[in-house]
Length: 67
Image (tube, rainbow, N blue to C red; front, side, top):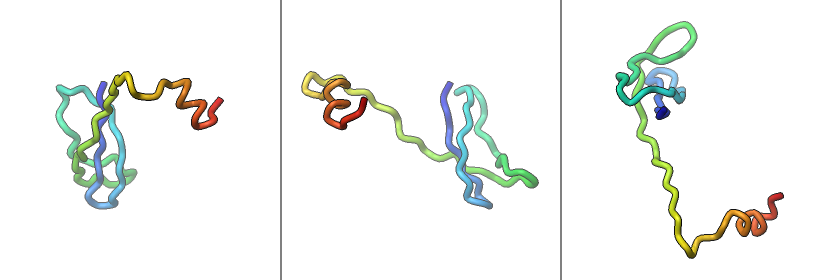
């Protein structure tokens, strides 16, 4: 299920909501006492590029000294 970032137009709080693509965008913030208007923020897509010249996970972990 996709996740969408929203920003409260009153308190500038950014929060993430998991929604179905068929659901309407949120209109109100999830702030505690009062509800303000929100704006959906564009998110960057996650890209996975499989390139024969790219470093494998094992080599990357070794390069970064990660166990």
